[in-house]
Image 1 (cartoon, protein in one colour):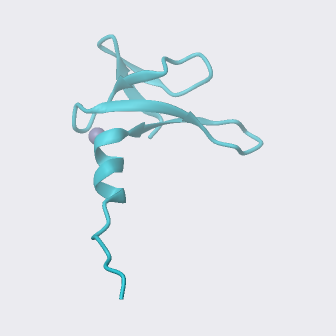
Image 2 (spheres, rainbow, N blue to C red):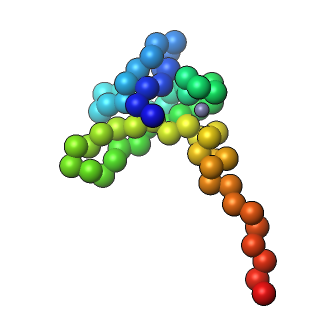
Length: 62
Ligand SMILES: [Zn+2]
């Protein structure tokens, strides 16, 4: 996402925006990450939602 809440204010992810902020959707912590593209766009990732999305069932070795 491009928007997050920092110090009670909505902010757009950018080079100058804070490293840590709050997710406007769920109130969880978000961290800023920069894409490795040419445009160098910064985006916020919600840790809570990322963790859920990355959750994988345990696999057993056979
Ligand atoms: Zn969230």
